[in-house]
Length: 440
Image 1 (cartoon, rainbow, N blue to C red):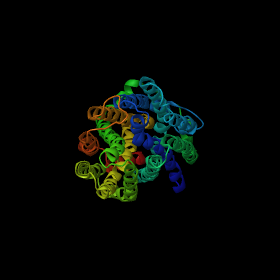
Image 2 (image 1 turned 180 degrees about the vertical axis):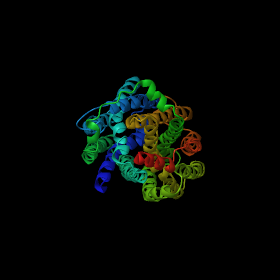
Image 3 (image 1 turned 90 degrees about the vertical axis):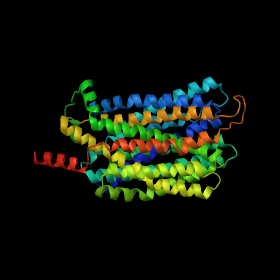
Image 4 (image 1 turned 120 degrees about the horizontal axis):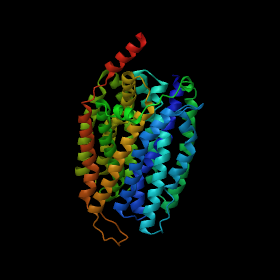
């Protein structure tokens, strides 16, 4: 695959990530601090949206696998889904704050359901393009690395939301202007990805669509390696969801300045982007699952130290964010490169292509993990709330915030990494498959 096309495909991830990280990083905080929603109801709305996202992803994957279009069975979705996806992201931030508690909850839930649906229609086929555009083990990791770089850039840009609105006199209006820009950017980045992948599915267009019964899909998805990888993903998504959503609360209620969160996030993302290349090169020599375990051991220790031993010294917090980015960088690139290998392994065993269904289940598991983190954050914040229900000033017990940020994410990441050690597909497996198919 030509280099410019790799970068063009990867550019689509920036549009996806700029909405994803803005939602993950700021939506819960926006619901509770700006809309003044009850923490439990805010968490419940996010849980419902993410749960629906987790339910519909596999079905969209199946639909994509069965699609026959001159625009490509996968490309057609992010080509024509870019606009509704951008609009659904925009609607999340225009909920009227003057409405009643229950009305705000209903509107928040509805807009999250809409966003989840359009997100799935775009992201599942987009991610499923990787095994289509490249068959090479190392090249897939490289493409995933390019995506991670754009994702990191999107995270920095998304983190600007907190910094920008905290410096404005009317924070709500500043937020609306920013998300409008983000929505436009999301739309055009996905169009670039669609243009860069044009023609890669031409060979698939004239092939008959293989009809696969639902029980056959279930059989594939209950294969041991598939289950291990998805359980790992569930723990990782719950961890990252909890970490990103709790960061603004940690900055405001522990460090004393919510603007610190965006600066810490920027440091974290810059350091993680700088080390993507190193983790990518390391994966050429070492087993990916071992690298993931090693990095997450350090992530656990760093989060624990930041969460429970850094309270007023902002310099220590920024230093912790820098080292956190170094080791979390492996999570941005290595796990995502495992899915195309699983696709090839199961295709070799069954003789049928199932790219979209595997990526659908991968994203579905990710969303279920985020759903768990949403309800978990809502419950912990509700239990930690020490102000009266009718008070305009909301305060939380510092211990609850520390547990959310410094303990729960690290435990989840470490647990998932230990489970991943049971995963059996590696470089030798894929090279053996490729050699057997070439000889055949």
